[in-house]
Amino acid sequence: MNDTFQIISGFLDRFGAEVEGRILQEPPDEVKASLERFARGNLPTEEQPGVFEILNRNPQWVAWLASEVKSLRPETRES
Amino acid sequence: MRKGPDTEFVVRQCRQGEPNALGWLRLTHHEALRSILLARGASLTEAEDLLADLWADCVPGSEDKPPLLDKFNGRCSLRGWLATVLTNRWIDLKRKEHRRAQLPVNGESSADEEMSEAELPRTRDDSLLELLYRSIGEAFARSPAQALVVLRLVHEYGLTQREICRMADWSEAKVSRLLSEAMAQIRKDALRSLKTRDPWLELSWEDLEAMCEIYQKGFFGWRADGYR
Image (cartoon, rainbow over all chains, first blue to last red; front, side):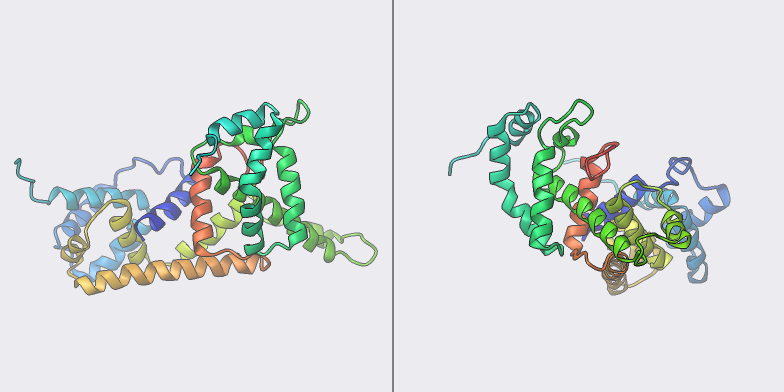
């Protein structure tokens, strides 16, 4: 399943007419605040659907949320 | 087992009009490509006619018609690339036949019929590309926002299911179920959409996925029927 979603999602992104202007945009501050809370597991359940809708309309912001979640990973110890 | 000539070498030779190279290409791929077309719903006659045109287009023709293989960039399998070209041409053929069959008995189309064809929005001038894009796009549009976002987080950005659980306060079972059900629904909706548009076309999900990948890797500025 890993490759499947990447392939079809990448296909849509590549051939979509609306690609220009969306790439590299950062979410506005109020959205960032919600995403930061979400990443830390602090977003109330009732607010989650709204955040999912915003992210679905602005898929480029999903990267920002992913980055926030990854920043919380414990650092790997150097061997 | 004896290894055949390198594909890149054969393609280069074909472009230069070397008949042995074309012969090798046909020997290696004709039967498999015919099977692919048959599996996708073509009749034997249709398949053989399309293949005859394909091989003819692989060699240099007139100055304003460079060989089809000039468009192959080597970033995907040649067989997959040729199968995509053939499928696209076959779709165009079937659609033309369908339109002709719908013409009134006197052979003239009404203004309404011409208008309905012209009104179809075609942002991508390639039948197969348009078909795949619309079908997958519609399947995504029908997916719940939550499902698509989680699919992206896991499969595009590499978050673990455990991280999703912690983020959304969900169980691992819920995350796993969400991912598998969402993907299954996307597959179902995309295939149903394909079938609605071109009912004669028999594509499996694996076909669809393979062609999406070939489009991303194999075609740069060219339509998948081999023309600009």
